Length: 89
Image (cartoon, rainbow, N blue to C red; front, side, top):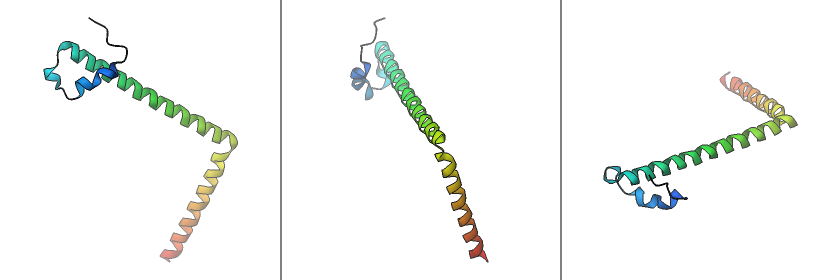
């Protein structure tokens, strides 16, 4: 079995329009390899975004911004609830 090329995404254009039923075993292996690499890339992107989001939240928490935001939201919701009660009366 030959190893796939260094950059299998270069060869992916050959497989996009081709029906898997019409592919040779080598082409199917290449397609599977391309799809696995694409999936790995997407998973790494998600991990990176989650890590970045956790870092931002931790920084906001360390600075006390989350508590201030929580107080502001609760005050805002309290005002909305009071206004809604006045409208119903």
